[in-house]
Image (cartoon, rainbow over all chains, first blue to last red; front, side):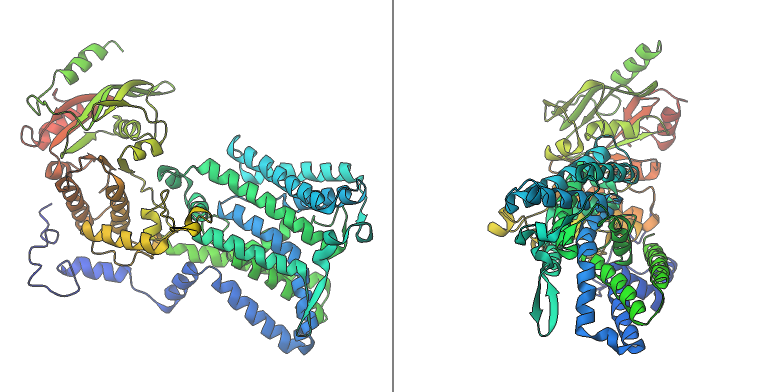
Length: 359
Length: 273
């Protein structure tokens, strides 16, 4: 109690930067604890900038695949990768939001396909004007988000279980609704398939879907980084109880995240219709898991509270680059699957290691 | 249950500490009851906090300390009893209500968000927005202003070990985290600051820094409720000590009127008031 170090008795005689008089052993012990090695410094850096490691991986993999087969670096080939990534990339934004709250959404692909089928069916079979069809798609996306969100926040069920259930529900509903039939792009009004159209930038073909995706990333990144809501999303995922005690309405934030995700999925549905020029009941199913892969490789922690949406774009691009790179290198498709599996495990291992910064 | 009468009379009969208090308490609780299923957390507890004092709450594990302050700060809703703030009856349904009324709490489990930086934590739940359209329509935060205010607040409190308010809280030591939590309470606690076991996880020097913060707050005129197991800490900073025992107030004493041994004896039931 009568610790002399605390009272700070002689501030005049010590005009140095040190504010408390250095008591030998305590200070030495403290210094020892906070000793940094190059490795811990790297870890600290990755901890502070979660998108850094996927950025490095992306650049390295592009270089390596370019060396293996220079054809990989063709502008046409690179633009093909972006086109292939557009759907997963867009859906990945929604998945990132949910994973940031330490949730997970297994139903994103089914919800996207359902929204896409609503857009396509109403615009073709029901002859609804295209803006209204898109609006109905948006409402469908919001409804899927609302259902997931209410189950998570009101019934307090784990998101994994909720979305495992809604995955089946949405899948059944979309099969019933569409009679398991596809809608061809030629039967749809131009604007609905327009995101599959390309424009030319210096010899590179870029689809409007890619543009929409990047704009959406910019919007969501800004909201997450610069608004109170964004900060609350991180706080809720980081430590929900701490967030509650700090005065954040946790359930309300969670519900809003699921709603926002639903709206983003509706945009993803529009991108998907453009990408496959039409839509079928199976077109979005792979993205249920692929979006999680992109988020995880993008450096967002499955435990919530840490990560960025830009990381997810990088993660989606890494998967795209690996698949295309291995294909161009002439390897069997199965090696692409193998590579993505290894990437996921490495990414989560790195995340675990990074999180050890926290003590 | 049948012992209730006697216990309560002891509690109410016991003005051992302050002879006759004529001031209005800043915060007063009357006969709070809180049960969890069959477990009685609070069994008719009353408490008064007067302006400019540090009131310590001590008691054995399970004596109802945490439940008591949760009821005072809106984290739990008491089944029975009344709360008064500045003499006016008041009801808290959630922590925000208490916070809006000027009661700030630092919880035992350190309610800071580890991944967010110091400034974000200080302003968590009441972020400052930019002026003009950017703030009102686009809801953009004024990060610069929040960081500056955070720095100012830390300086005012004499927290010199935290210079960089952009560091994530998880990179800080236990004492520094506690300092962040206390600073948040101090920055916004206009009426009362409640600290639940603020020194429990800290080393000697860090504890001393937190106790300095407590005195600092009192000197700024903000009454503090301090929950602690640590008798020397309690006797160092408290003006009065509320002793909880088995869900009831066993006594309220002062460091001048009773010794630490007395306090422990009352706490454990070896001695009555």
